[in-house]
Length: 308
Ligand code: CDV
Image 1 (spheres, rainbow, N blue to C red):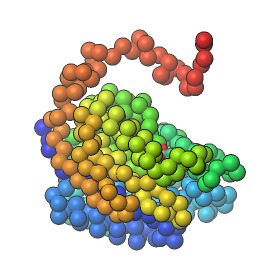
Image 2: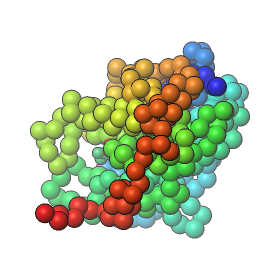
Image 3: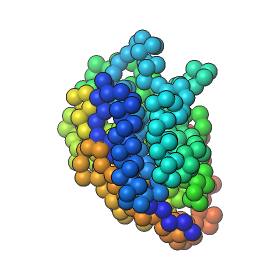
């Protein structure tokens, strides 16, 4: 079985005026640090190349399109792919994708150690709203700028490990992890941009936000006997605070490594993927213990139906 050193490259704030090229330089610096620490793979955040633009309300399509990539790699990101190949390190990162036929997704890709893209994921659970919301302290317009992902939750055998991806809000949904778990996932990578305050409840602050993130990532890991890397974009972005709290979790749900800043910061953990087998063959042996005859509502019903 495979042992890999997995690194999480938390990114500090990216301001609206920051170019993709300047961000890629920061990503490469973290990649170099990861290489010096013997990492085999580096996990970057959601929408890693730009500021978290869904906080801005825009109507002009050209202005919106500025934030999207029409190909990957492209001129701005090619140096990252080149360095990853030279260092023999697999990478995964998120970006806003515009397809040739005009669809818009919140996307992540994963490469092998030769920088070939071997997997793509498009965010399924889009939080927020479509129109300007005067009730919120700040906007979260993912439903305006993205379509729900059309690829589903898939896994790829990459460098000997069964890997799957999810993005930010997906981590709060047990369905995300279970669909990956049912495909034998051993490493789930999840980039995120999570505001440090709740736009709809100003009493909910950082402590609770970090707790909910940990809770979701640790539960997903334990309940599916998989490693999980949840990696933030953090810090004060264009006047809006994003939380840090990047963690790498083992298949028992324990945190192996945790970021302590809200800046560019590398975390790293040695992951022995043989450790996934115990949970998968005992308490979470799905073949023996799942009772799908009682799970029909999971796929046939969206909202709550109150029958009592
Ligand atoms: N980028 C995100 O998906 N953010 C959400 C916020 C809006 C709650 C999250 O789940 O962290």
